[in-house]
Image 1 (spheres, rainbow, N blue to C red):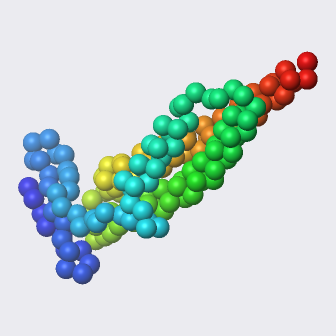
Image 2: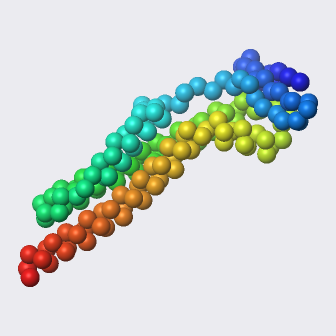
Image 3: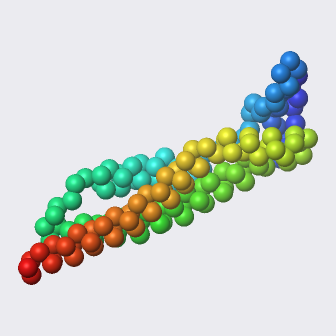
Length: 157
């Protein structure tokens, strides 16, 4: 069974229900690609991937190399915090836009919630990835400081 539900501004979504399995779904929902702060989710994901690739490289264990790594990681930490905020905005915007598709529908809230989460999976993945990247950078900065202290102690012994 298929039904067409009128939304605001002459938009429609089509919902379906399989009579045999009683499963429901949404066929079409007028959700556009999100671009927050001038960068799309894909652009943010590419930048996160570049930072992640950089932090996987081995450290130069000389004091000058460690100072450079500390500086780089500090800059990446600042940028990752900004990307985290952009990812949160993109996720919230997409959730809101998808939720508007269900205004006036008679679907249960639980079904709608799961459909919204399914349609926002890319944004959620980016948000979680940036959150973990941010935490990793914090720990790596501590590690580089420890290594720098060790190298400094070795110079004076």
